Image (tube, rainbow, N blue to C red; front, side, top):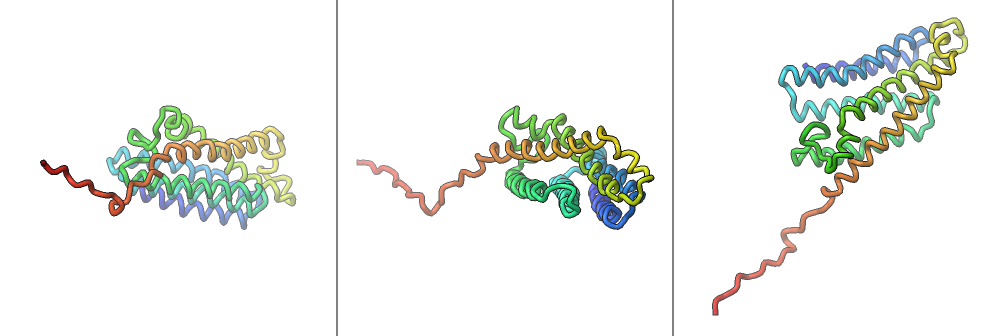
Length: 222
């Protein structure tokens, strides 16, 4: 059931993208709660997995992969629509590849990205990357920021000045708050990624090649 929720989120993502690209201001207004629901589903699938006792390593990895597809796809299309500079999706994608690659190594050794058996080596980096508060702050900033950018595309439809989305986005406070969430989301993307790289430095120590070891013969008795 949890994996089905993840698949449903991905299907709805493509529906939302289509609405953003080809809809008018009214259609894009409807895309905002759809994007919000897609992000809310990130917590629903984990909750369902825990309640039904169906948590697994595959489910955890699949859930993270679904999250990456959602956020990376939205950052890319908003850059393509020229709402944000292209360096933002480049930065987010680079961080995703590096951090998830490192976590895959940890997973092979029984370490999970979050939870009690995570790969963090200090209380501070664990709080920063796996703590409930920081995960929630990052999740809400990202969801609100990307929902804001969704509506901003509708706001750019200047030929529909009487639409609801124009009435909302005409206020400076709304735009300032939205951009603040975008900036916070991008900042936390980097801030929460660096400790993963640092704490994984222990994994970079390659074991000696077994063939290069020189066996010392046991001492012989006189």
